[in-house]
Image 1: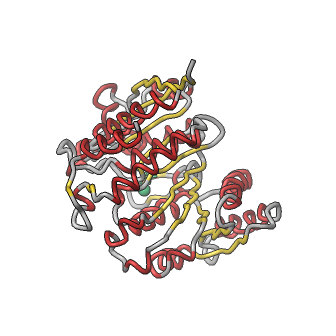
Image 2: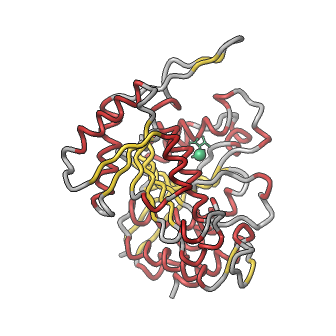
Length: 356
Ligand code: IPM
Ligand code: MG
């Protein structure tokens, strides 16, 4: 009489299938003894979908995700599809899927595991204890603004935010801050852009409902610098789509490898859970990818989409334990490693820990 959940699975391209398989291995090892059952439905998106159906986001996937409790996703893209027209590229499938699913809130934690302080390119003292949550607006801003056009001798995009869009993402950030250290730094470019001035004023309005949260503001160029100079000053970073894209990549490297960090994209309905890294076509199929970001995304899925917090805790603990014991994929390999493991060996180790 366990709890049953329907999970949409989009493996994608490059290392996508390898890393998603490891996350599923871990989920299956968990579900049996945690009293719930996961039913997976594979769906196509990105390059794999282009090869199969001619488009990056087939209608079947758009319909399919709506009947799931959550969607676990690997990564998309690769040189094979780089020369296609923009709207037919794998990336356009991902952007349309986010829009279709209404996942406007992208949560990207940047955590530095104590076991890996030496893996960062920054000094251990700078990164030890870093625990940042980047809250990135995901379905608006310059990624989606109209008009947009590529002409012969010029091209343009439009950065636009409505009050409704800013208010709803700001509320998500304030709610998260309430459960953390109660500090938000809203990042914009209000010294230059009207849309950023509007963003800032609107965030200040929302902050009035959260008197316990300390709100500060930073220009995006300064924020990029501060992330490298003194990342521990940040608790929650709230920002728009393109600034969040850039800052979350920068923040991820504090941890030592982009292969470690998960993300959750949530909104009104079904959420999308994916590692923040890309499809790494250069190492695809070699069995050397780091599956931890995807396994960690599965943990976020259990926590945020399914309310299975105890199971999520088990995954988080298992990841820490495997790192503490010195098991590393090659991307982290040189640092305090006892053993360099393959992608599937790391999956086996985590699956073994969570099944106990
Ligand atoms: C990300 C990626 C995507 C983005 C690309 C693949 C469209 O970089 O999820 O951060 O820019 O949002
Ligand atoms: Mg990105």
